[in-house]
Amino acid sequence: MEAEKILDRIWSVYQESVRLSNLNNQDMEDKKPVNIYNHPNLHSYIPEIDGNYLLFFNKIYTTPVRKWLKKILKSLTWSILKRQVYFNTAIKKLLYDFIQKSYEDFAKDREVSKKFSLLEQKIELLPLLEQKIELLPLLEQKIELLPQLEQKIELLSQLEQKIELLSQLESKLEDKVEQIFSKLEIDNSLPSKVASVDEARIGSELWFNEPIIVGYRENGEAYWAGTNERIFEKSFVLQSLSRLYDSSNITVLDVGAAESLLAYELACLNYSVTAIDIRPIGLSHPNLKFVKSDICKPVIPPASFDCVVALSTLEHIGLGWYGDETGETFDCEAVKQIHILLKPRGSFILTVPYGKKAVTPVHRIYDKESLHTLIQGFDISLAVYGVRLDDFTWTMTDDEVEASLKEHNPHNYLPGAVAMLVCKKPV
Image 1 (cartoon, rainbow, N blue to C red):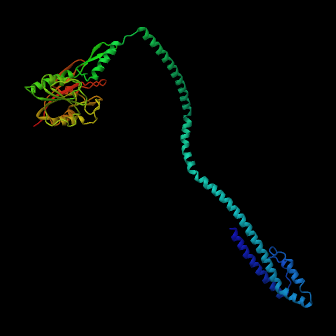
Image 2: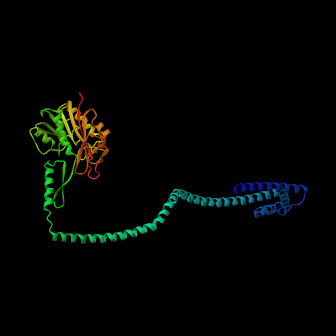
Image 3: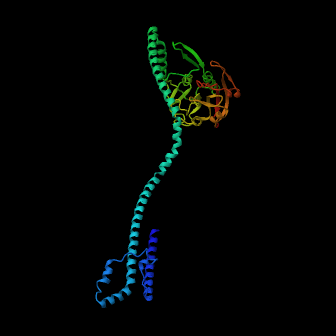
């Protein structure tokens, strides 16, 4: 460091002054005059002597005695004076250089501090810069996609123009259609009457799901649209009841009675009938009692019925199609409740869609395994199957394999087969 060099320089000056003093003393002993300014080792270090020192030797001592005293003092003190003058002047010079150097170092340090402060600020910005550098590949990809984006924008512009043209054409087409209808003067009274009749029947809870499906054409003409599984189900229930019981003096529970004429027909045949459904029913009969409730909820006392009928009902429970609560196993819960409501050795007559297992928005399609899971706790007395041959024709069979191969219609969800069972509650 520069400071250490300056201190070393001060020390060397001091040593030179000591050596100068020794040389002067030795020369005086040898009585040889020494010219200190011509001395080879000190020439570069000895400055001029201040005039005040010369006045001290020249003006004070004017008498011979004083001159003699001057000579003695000069011989004794001259070397010391020269040494002190040299040393003080050299030290002043070195101190000046040291102060000058210190100031320059301070200025340099201040400049370096400023640069370090700027550098620290730039270092703090490095994370942001790194993030921007990381985003560069994405930016490059987006830049590469710019031509494609411009093409798409151009295509969108063309598409907007086409849409505008289509809108204009559509407006013109609507005007022409209105003109055509005004000329033809089509009478829509018949279809509207058919629609109003169906709406009135549904609103009065008098629309019933019958085996013969009736459709209506645009001109209001009715036609045979198809035949569903109810072509077997109702007759199967009536025949099973006649075989199981000699008298009509029994209590019957019809589960899911809305949209079905079965409860009314049983009441007309003098059976004591209770109908249960989450939807209301539209007709009444002295032999018919209606309970508006969910079959899964225990609202009827246990062991209240000789027979329970579930005609195409269990497959709907828990799917929410008729506004009921949804649950994957609610059909099994309904059967458990039916088991509780039956008297010992009571009969359970049920019909469900059968074939390849499926769950549609409307109902479930059961296979052999899922059907046996459904009726756990019951003994099967009779099992027969109805099989669809075409949209209008069905046939009955006791071959479970034949029925199990049938698939439902994916468009209207109508099943390809139906399973009809008579079960007994064990004692």
